[in-house]
Amino acid sequence: MIPKMNPLKAARLRKGLKQRDLAIIGDCSSIAIYQLEIGERKRVSNKMIKAYNAAGFNGEQLAREYQEWRKVHRQRLLDKKIDWPIRTSHKKRTPKNTENNQKHRTEANRN
Image (cartoon, rainbow, N blue to C red):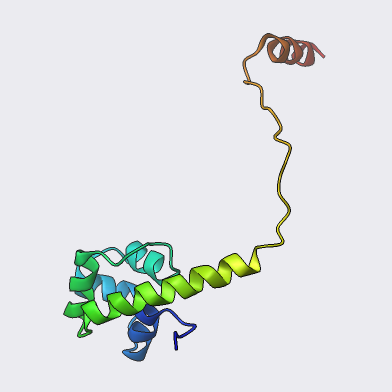
């Protein structure tokens, strides 16, 4: 059974660590930890595995659990978003410095 909570986040919380604390212990970015915990990154890098190992976790095991969790988490998100409307029209933007815009600006400044 795959847990609903990210295994990396669950392990960090069990030890009572903040993302910032783990980043300091593991000499890595707290942004990288955040991105892993929300499932934004596809895999756990070797540097992050070393960071989790430095904090007293089994980084390799957590990385495997993360991959499994991410697959399930991603599928859950896709299932929720199936009924989203498809955008068919795209509004074309015009550059700000076209002649019409320049003319309009100068007329507006005169008034």
